[in-house]
Image 1 (spheres, rainbow, N blue to C red):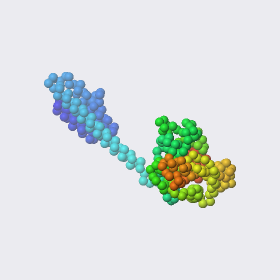
Image 2: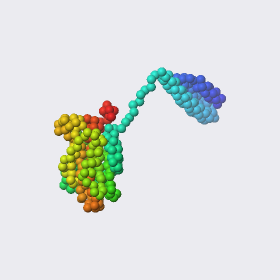
Image 3: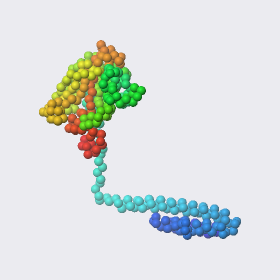
Image 4: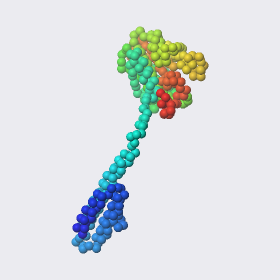
Length: 339
């Protein structure tokens, strides 16, 4: 019986060596390991009829041979499968066909606007600063001279997280953090995401991007503010842009102003984008309130400064004539690929 198993082993190895396809390997498997009529299984079935002294050794040898043939068959399958895949790939590859154009990705239009604005202010020697999006109530409100009864501190205007933590509603928080760490002179902008529970429509979103700016030094005046913002507007919108400063109020600046530019869509003639006024509001700005300086430990008698803030989505919409802010966040490649 042992000699017979050795012959079966050699024959199985020869049969697998001659197999040139997966079907041929399957035929070898059926011949030797098939449940019905397989050579090895037939031997195992015949073991009870052998003399008692041969049963154990024959059964052990038969099982070892079964495992060995199973491994050979699996190795043959893997080898032939790789060979067939390589052959199919060669047949499918046609050198005469033109190459496929792979489209390149590019930066989101919001990212492009932020990078452009950062480049403009870098030329004006402004540093780029960043801060956390999950903020403390102190940095978002208290340090910015926003009183406890101010409407912006209500639940319907701010995403509160508990334990005086919230999603920042403005990047002015970065200004406070920078002033706590540095002494004047300071010249910086702070780009980043802000969050407000606004109803989403064509002009509003619950998450959008802001860029806040701050300058602090001795002798800084409102004329410096106008000069910097005029340079920015001309760099971003073009040399022929016109600007208008309107008196306004912000808790952290005094005096304060809303800044309008001539509508880039209708060139000041009046259209639906500018509500037929010829002007579009783009910025809020003003001289830093002395209370803010006192909070961060600056001498309000020695230092003055100005601050400003702008919405990135609004500037991008004006630049490209986009009429719906939701287009920026829908990931529609038909829209995004235009920029």
